[in-house]
Length: 273
Image (tube, rainbow, N blue to C red):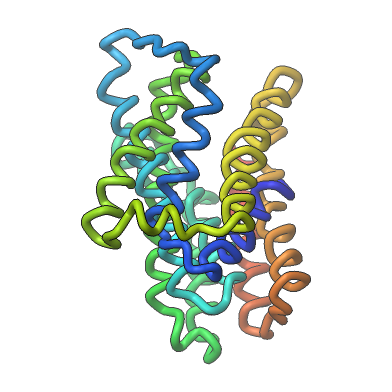
């Protein structure tokens, strides 16, 4: 969770070094793809997995990461973006209800409502007046992360190396093309990336995208999903702590109140089956 939480301040450091946000997301996925090739070995999954695999890869590998970077790029304050990412859980539950017909209990409805109330409280923080676009992108990031979790349920029997390689492949190619059209001068931008920025991008690819997920998969061998999932509520705490030490961000009272409501709601959503 410390690794997951560090993804936000580390990405912001790279963006502050003038790395274009969409290109950075593409390069992150490209590094993940290169590392996974020996494990993937270009194996093609069964055709029945194609529709959910493509949907999952685009949601997770393209839309989640591009909106994460855009939210950080358009925000001078990082902590609300980190808390906003927690909306992925309520969005995922709602998506499961609409797309898979799953039942949502009254307790979950209450917790989903309180999570959004917490975000609204944060929105009223006067310090965020110039960061609303970033918060909007953070909401989109959470939405597509929630959708990705729904698609992943149809891929639970698929080899994880194939799954992660597909995410990296789609993310790298699609984001590279988008960056070329929107941000322009892609090759020149890559040449201008400093060694320190490459280290930050590599950290995101290796420590966050690979190691953190591998650690979670390792835990799944010994513990149930219900035991592990509540710990996801810890990554905003680690992330906010890191933004304080790296950027000196001091949370306001409204942010603390809203953040506690959101994180608590998401924690109990994880606990309810």
